[in-house]
Image 1 (cartoon, chains in turn purple, red):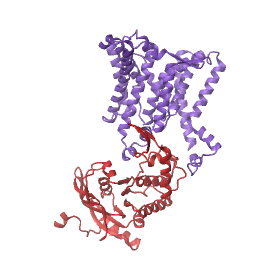
Image 2 (image 1 turned 180 degrees about the vertical axis):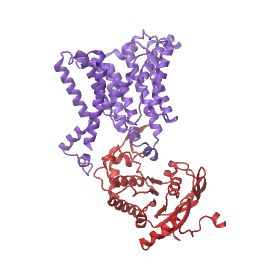
Image 3 (image 1 turned 120 degrees about the horizontal axis):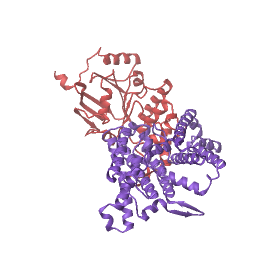
Image 4 (image 1 turned 90 degrees about the vertical axis):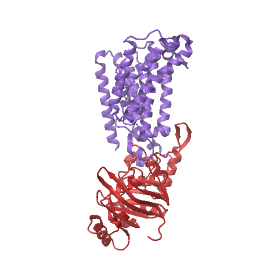
Length: 344
Length: 264
């Protein structure tokens, strides 16, 4: 009940500084940020390599596509849903773009720039398509999200393997690869383009969730779907929106990953759905729905990446790393429950 | 009864669920600025009748007139468009959202619109919610409190406030006091009186006859899907209770119901 005293009866007067700080620390993101900072400080102390701009930008780069897909997953999980198909969608979208660039009948008649634009649009469309299918299966056929997206996980992966015959598509045009490989000079740093895209997407998604009517309905569906229905808004439309957006963002993540790697492999991003869901959960989004933020997911994805990087830098045996990551996910959720119980 | 101006008239409403005749030609009249109590034993058809009015059920027979005009209610939105709002027994609030967000759920005010992108006008909605709470004398410290941190009475007040915030002409309340403590019941009943003073027309379903006695002008009794009685509320609560219960359990059945049955 601490909220009750924290916001004064008169809405226009600001609460005192002490209460402001207490509210700040009650926020999940601050705790997460502290964990990230402690983890980073520990690695800086223990290794010579962690706090080099090269290592930091590599970290940022590697988690940028996980984070982008995780923003979409965040919205899905806030509605108390889940999207398991994200990893497959990343590969599917990257493959669709690569196919347009190399095999599409139209490819030979276009110059490079329009072709790359077409490939990007096609890749995003592939992601949206799977998202729409997820949404339709969940709203019209009333499948549990877990089952629907488990199905599309397999279908999208199967199509990718089937059409490529299991072979990767290589020799993607240079200007397509630039999407993932270009560095942009900002002040004294060379910032990878995927990081800038990721931050831009984070900002847009954060504003969408926090400041729009649709965003509020996403939270409301997670809180009480029936209440949304009787209020006159349409929960099915909200669900269609989150799964479609989830597909779009997974598609974008897949494009960036493919451009970075310079090859569209049919088994790319395999198992990424677990990393993406882990980032969302570590970031404080409740799997029961109704709670979560984009900023939390961004920090959650960063914690996951720093942890992996730290294990490598500390010489932790590679085969054991999934066990360590799994333990951190469980600890994060236990901590979240503990924090919630205390606040009530 | 004579000088009631009807705002809602339901005539010979029938609703069947398979072989079960839930409503067997029920008439209901709600007067302008009247509080009507709707009572009956379990499965008497009270909630079914109200779900027909709120658009949740499509009736199998009968007509509905709103202010004398025949209304086609094919869904909750039709009913809402006619100015009929329902307050549900389990409040129908999103616990994870704050008071203002719940009050404006589905009616959000947008600062500006760009296709489906509508930017929330949060400060305006918070101010309007504050005004509404103050006007109805609902005691809630902040409109930014999450609903899960409110007491049962406060939640019911938010649910009722929400129903009346958007120019509702008719408010239906399904068991508004069933889940509340004694102190909270008093506040909700005061709130209902306040709404009546402001001119609202209200139908209340309740098992608690003393609540009906305290706030309603008239009571209508249903039994086995038929209207079996109707009384203006007056006099002594004990006599009232005995009278109503007699109708509810079928000990008394002297009320002429439908034309059909009058003919039989």
